[in-house]
Amino acid sequence: MPNPIKGSLRLFASILTLCVVSLSVCAEDPVVRVGVLKYGTVNWELKSMQHHGLDKTHGFTLEIVPFAGGDATRIALLGGEVDVIVSDWLWVSRQRSQARQFAFVPYSSSVGAIMVPEDSELNTLADLVGKKIGVAGGPLDKSWLLLQGMAAQEYDMNLATSNEPVFGAPPLLTEKARDGELDAVLNYWHYCARLEADGFRRLVSAEDAANALGASGPVSAIGYVFDEHWAETGPAADFIKASRATKQILNDSDEEWQRLSDSGAMKDGPDALKVLRERFREGIPRRAHANEVADAGVIYALLSELGGKKLVGDAPAMAEGTYWDGLPLSAQ
Image (cartoon, rainbow, N blue to C red; front, top):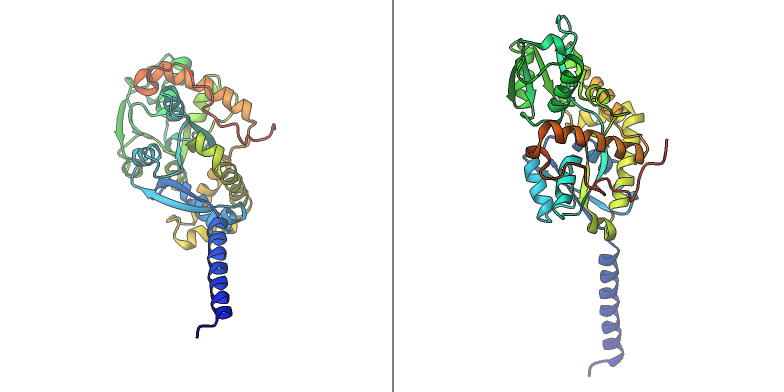
């Protein structure tokens, strides 16, 4: 005859197990899916965050989702396949002007520069007249437009027509510069750092151009971008706190950079690693929120004038709320 007491105990044990499993599932940290370029520099921060467990410390699990290009990351965000991507505030402002409530948090103010060989006779933008200059990012690249604005203001010069611009992919232009096929090259910051390690020097940077045109300090070129509605209910603030904690490690620890190199996250030799490390640190956002937003508005207006609707659409001014104010940096 079945023992009713044993049966009750088994039933109780089953219920207890189900409760424990349910509580465990409920207690799991939320996952933050970050879409990034497969070999992009943002991977350095994210992999460092994972290595030090800063996602877990801040109450979430980081999932790095690699993509082949920037357009793919934006499509993934629009489609809800990822929670966060890295883009610029121009794209965020354009989305907000179309009633898509994305928001931007500064990630890095490291920007590109026009690089020339150390022994080059070129010293100012005016010296580029008639020269062959490589330009990464295409005719509507923000750095290229700002440098055109600076050339027009300071030298009454049309930078786009007074020389021979060669548009191309960053790695290709880097190799052409090393081979002497270009007189100068405007490239993204990490390619500039690698050229710097090879003996090139900066002629003028996009930050120089922005400051010459009215900005009062460095403005983040790229940032973390996410949907405001997700930020209201998801772990956006925790993710940003973890990002800042990771940046502090990357700012303070040379050993962490060596670890990234040794782990294969970076493919650069010791000379390039040193320059990349220093340029990354220079670009860590440190400005007060209000000051950065104000300067981004100034630069947006300039880019709207220089790039027109092809760049900014029908919005001549940066959309309100482009910069997320959920966790701003404190005043400096």
